[in-house]
Image (cartoon, rainbow, N blue to C red; front, side, top):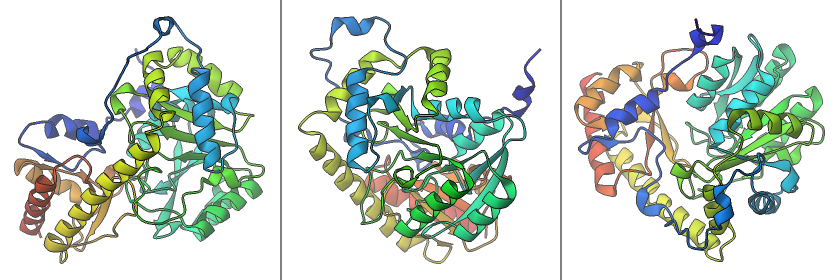
Length: 381
């Protein structure tokens, strides 16, 4: 009675964990939830009455112009006509899956990668081609080998504060990726939800700005810098893709909510926006350093990690070869939630890694939760 693809439908472990993690006595390092105290206050004073009516599928022109101006500052020279407003950036993944993926389509992803991308592309039948990450970005030799041998229809990459690893591609990696994709005509899907949350100096120039021939889509969101509950995000793309994405957006939900677009435009074009971003960076920088200190204190002998230069996550690799998924329930029993590594791999495997979010918990709870989690791990060594 259902479509064939329902057999490939996967649930989201992070959503299931968050249902438990929302208990008041739970310390959650699981989801990438922004801190409520860091969110700007919504002010709908002056909201035009006509925004209660249906609107354009591509999004309001004034928001698309503002997004295009911001992207142009970052080196991606686009206009409003190159921007499509989304209902959350994950809608962009769904639209791109509908555009590119048939059953068996080779889709290149980092290993590890964003678990929602795995969930989305697998639903449409993608055959994943994984490329491992290094400290400076994707493994370039492996990338070239698999681009040549697998001929992926597109590559989905998160080059700036990658989720879950926190890796930020350096300049050489970004240029080599662009050169390879131009040479072999690989479409780039570049996802950058964390690019504004930078704490240490690193290269954040979008890869799509370096492309000369290959098609591309760049996903961005306001969920990490503003209000995630409004579900307002955007994509920019090369001109050859926009007509198709525009029609797919029409078919998906007609248009993104207009009141949310107005609120995001008001924030994005306000004189306080640069100061808001600066405050946000300072706030999360401090929380990152608090978790780093707690990890140094409690995890120094049981795991390895690199302090992320931006984003919202630490990615830990346990020294012991144990499945971190088996640690989840014991940790939940001790009122600490985290994300095990297994769901972040498109090709299933056992993982001794875990992702810890530092943005949501209070400084006191970060220390308490890291200490408790270390105790849980040591009890299972």
